[in-house]
Amino acid sequence: MKQSVNILISGGGTGGHIYPAIAIANELKKRNVNAKFLFVGAKDRMEMEKVPQAGYEIKGLWITGLQRKLTLKNMAFPFKLISSLWNARKIIRKFKPDVVIGTGGFASGPTLKMAQSKGVPTLVQEQNSYPGITNKLLGKKVNTICVAYDGLERFFPKDKIVKTGNPVRQDLIEVSDNRVEAQDYFKISKDKKTLLILGGSLGARAINQLIEKNIEWLVKQEVQVLWQSGKLYYQEYKKYRNLEGVEVLEFINRMDYAYAAADVIISRAGASSISELCIVGKPVIFIPSPNVSEDHQTKNALAVVEKNAAILLKQSELDGFVSVFEGLLHDDYKQQELSENIKKLALPKATEHIANEVEKLINS
Image (cartoon, rainbow, N blue to C red; front, side, top):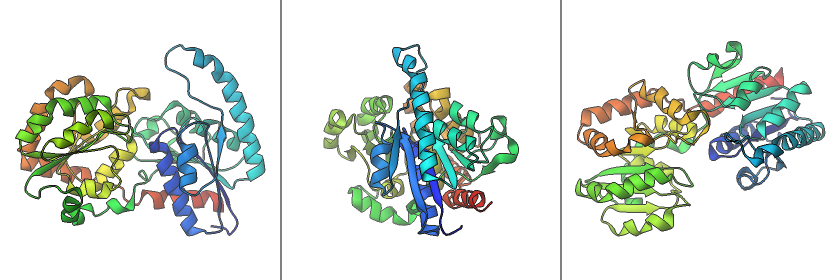
């Protein structure tokens, strides 16, 4: 990479867009300490807090997505779009980026669109097996599209696609080596199976309600539970910490230890979560959120389940949870089979490969 380089990155709205963007920036910064970085996000979204915490400057655009239902908020969308395109153009003119990277989210559309109009090389990092409308539109003119799943030539020009995987935390590569240390950290028994429940940092109401309904049954099965209830629901569910072998946490700071301690994992099916779970290599029951655009979490989960690498339990079918979980809990062969198969899907060097693609654009 050349000595003086300006890198503009746009991504946000959820952690699934923000953390990959930060991981890519960190890798490029490690390679070139003189590189200058600027992030572009949507005002009032979580990136405006998380990106500065990671040590990077960020500019906010006045932009939101279109609501799927007809609402008054949609009436403001054209004005927000025009404002965002205008301000993205000003940011690009002032910062003079050598490359612009989009990881998804409301702000990435106007930012990459204006970069393309100015002839600046652009790269999209698509985390999901089914891309959103913004990346589908951008993909027609973007230079490079980094993906994590096979089959995305249905949506993007085949010659622009590079399969890299999604950026993940490097401390997850060998989590099994830390199992005893992790059990001590959470003060859990080494003689019982451990179920880890992940509904995202804010939490997933349906998953929390499912666990609450079955928590006493799980305890009777000699299963201990590490339950990340999420920020929105912790006060409601922390009372279950009184049960033996149950730990309810608002947020898990040591995810490497949580994965290391787990024997079975219940998780939503966001793209970043799936990428981590492939590296961790534990048996997983996916309960995708049905409340996301294009039902992309179900599509993400199916891409894994179809390779006999996980179990899918739809939110509309949670009445079957006891049967599904009990069948997995008492089938050591099935647990091993799922572990081995999901591990085969792991792409642990994704961040490095994406950075390589960015460097190619800069150097060209």
